[in-house]
Length: 358
Image 1 (tube, rainbow, N blue to C red):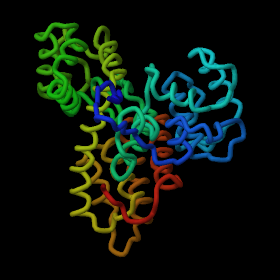
Image 2: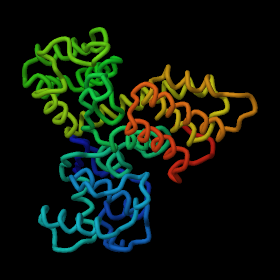
Image 3: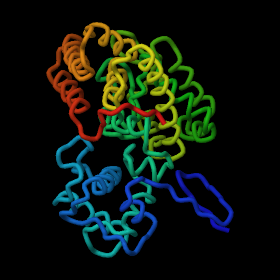
């Protein structure tokens, strides 16, 4: 009888061992332990495969690793070499700085302190297919918080606590959505992590985030109940703990995908100009930052008859940046929004061909 463990779930398939697939041949062969495949190493030309390893390293705390939208993504240079040498030493692997099959398996299977919703992690650790909306989600998550399951914003935007791969924000009520999903899909873990084993405290957290404005002051984002001041301890530590649990990571992904598919249905019906994978990802990111209503308001404000898809996206990008500047009057927020929009307009990771949701 062959059994296999993935994402913290015991899955049994009789005499068949079903392996997750990343969809990049060399990566899948490394993960499968194929002795004939060459390790990834310094100067390696396969940038896509190198990028997978880099984001897995980032999840293990190697902060110098580039994001998929960075120019150095996929370049096996000195930073990747040093990170891999250290990772091997820390996990009892033979001395070296390349990524062979045992090292790659360790990158996936060893618990990561700060895991990212990257292609390699989503497919090989959490068993999601990297296609359609999952690919879009992965790239949007990179802009929200470097793809971190534990991304936290402690009220810098006056929205209370924002958490997770798409930054479920407290004031709009979205934080309550992900907490409800945790409670529904894994009640024992929810109580253990968020209540310290006390069901009343865990459910009190859920009830608090379901209050008007998510349980925070509408103007300041400060809590209305100091027992549930989520931008302080012990709550920050509890959210971080939830983010390292693979079952709850999978809940984050499923919940985000449901939200994205709802938004996609609205876009598909109301904005016929927006058909490409790039435009869909752009709109998902826009809605994630401005809210669905804000994204549609931006679209309506700039759309003109005869615009090409590219012209429409560029106009929406400019309007988005203008609104960020008007709302916050902070150059760092404005510059960040501009970089964010330009990344989706220009990255080669997104196609200009029609989007396929599945």
